[in-house]
Image 1 (tube, rainbow, N blue to C red):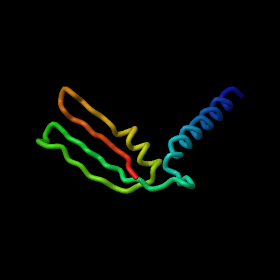
Image 2 (image 1 turned 180 degrees about the horizontal axis):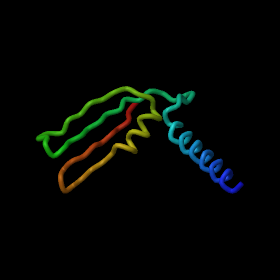
Image 3 (image 1 turned 180 degrees about the vertical axis):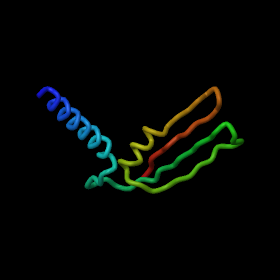
Image 4 (image 1 turned 45 degrees about the vertical axis):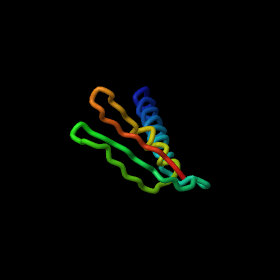
Length: 84
């Protein structure tokens, strides 16, 4: 009996985690488009490179939080900026 409750609890917890991870990528009414600007540099590069793309504001915000990185000792970085 206890094993059934544990499995059910794990399934519910897994479902909640998957739902939480999918929420930023679902279409939200009123969520406008944003221009996502990405600047990056690796140790092999002499100069930083950049590119931009258009996406929804919520996806851009998640990508900015997940991808922003800077290593001062090597000079590597990734910066994501969201603009309208």
